[in-house]
Image 1 (cartoon, helix red, strand yellow):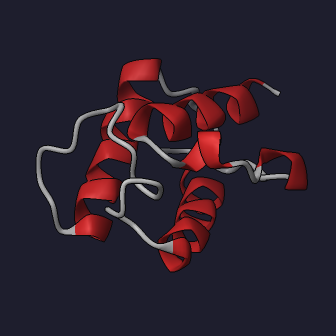
Image 2: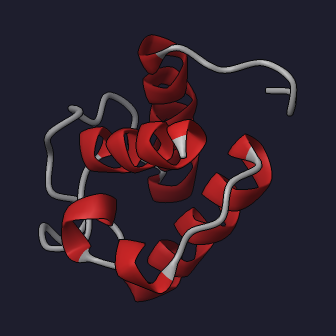
Length: 87
């Protein structure tokens, strides 16, 4: 991802899914599977997700973004990225 290009929803989802797969060590995680509340990832992984989003997509994750719904699934994280990129 470059700072000049705007990724598509599918591109964001694929990048996020790949990161979650590497972070969890579990391939084939469904986009709606609960990651933190389902015990797939822990709170340290949530911090890593914030860092990943900010560095990869060149956006800032604000205090208001730090809600479970934004980090508890591939779909939630991809939606957060889409909102922050559009802002």
